[in-house]
Image (tube, rainbow, N blue to C red):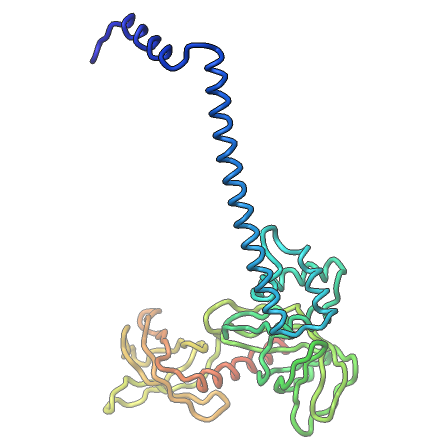
Amino acid sequence: MVYGNQLKIAQFLNALAQGFVQTRLEILILFVFVTALLLVFTLYFVAQKRAAQRESANRSREMLEHRLAELELSEPQIELLGSMVRFLEAGLSEHVLLVNRHVFDECARRMVQAGAASPDEMNALRLSIGFRITRPDEIPASSLELPEGSPVLLVVGTGRRLHGTLVAQAPGFMTVALGQGAMPLPENAAVTFYFHNSAGIFSFPTRVIRQLGDAVQLEHSGDIDRSQRRKYYRLSQKLPVYVKPCSARARPQESMLLDLGGGGASLTNPHSLMKNGDLVEISFSPRMEKLTLVARVVRVSRNLKVLHVRFESLSETERNRIMSYLFTQAGERRMRSR
């Protein structure tokens, strides 16, 4: 511990203070100088911040004008876009509405709820901007985002089922081709629209606008019903299957699928022969031509009686065939449960 003479320390500090400030006038001058210095620095930083904000606003405005020129929106649509700004979260610019689908959808939802725009107007604007789902496993915010060419299932109120293909999208309606010989649907008939992607099977309510030959026009909907959240939809499904190790000498063994999905399956383990890590070949016919797939055993359960496999090198064509089958099966089960 260090000890010192407190009196000498006090005298030293007093002398030091007197060396800097001798009078009240000097104290006042020093105070005014420091205050002015702080004020100058504050004004400088405020000016810098405002300049940065102006530059950011100008850049955002340039991006907005450039994007608007690319889209060639109509005057009513530009006015509608301007009205959406008041529904934006604080700090977001108008330009975000043209580049971020999720921000656009949230503002559109708020506008419709507030009665500031109709669903058809927002759907038309969404279509003109060009928002589409960019990932196959993403759940759409509206039926307007379903890709053309998608297989669909229409269930009329009475339970009648019609398979079709979504062939065209328009701001006020979507067109589904039903195939030759399909019985016409009456106008304004209530329909449940089923579709699928790799995330699962979904549905929404809609109504018939008009029938045009073998095609039907339906209303759009934003009330999408979610079924399952996983990378690839899976459905409990018992189906005969043959399985064998990926070896030329191995013989196929009879087995039974317990569930099936776009990424893998579960099946019984014949004679408990397969083990974790094995590469196996699976053959089955789910109401379609025979499928032969290579899979990896990722887990064995129930005392080695059940195999859980992940498909290896599955082509998109093969995956789509599996998903179409599951899609039809799920639709049939929902109808039977009603």
